[in-house]
Image (cartoon, rainbow, N blue to C red):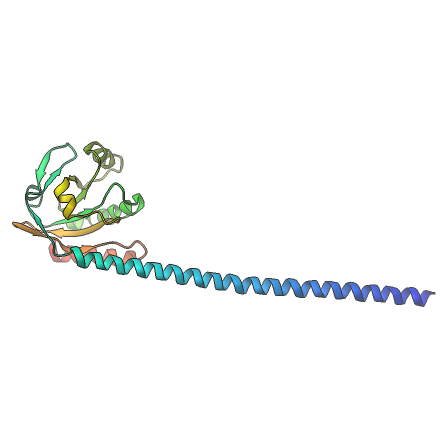
Length: 210
């Protein structure tokens, strides 16, 4: 009788051990499969992001090729933060680095480029960096300058200027020099994923024009 009980207990133990081992193997396989799937998902996601960045980089360079070299009339109208109308020739009396943005652009993108310009404010000169934008009213522009403690002069562009210096959905920079037909030079669209390019651009512009 005792042998039968021991035999039964051994069978139960073996069965329990089999169940435990089976479950452990299943969990191990599941965990391994999950790790493989997670790795594949991360790889696909990284590839997708890389392709998106490359696509954006290509689009930015095409915009630069399209608009770089355009000529602007020196009589284009702007308004300053006080609502005073001025002509382009009134503010471009020497080489100027322009940041063109719109109130509809990503606020973080605009802030980032203003911070980049702040880094070069001393070496280029605060009065040689201008912000060209288009706000619904000059009041909004004045409020933006005050709230963000912007040290650079900001000008609201009127209709003709807006047609030439188009809003492309992202802030961009270029250089203007004082002459009758002001030419857009070295247009550059910053790509926040590659901040080193923006630093290189600003250094190049500083050395060449300022």
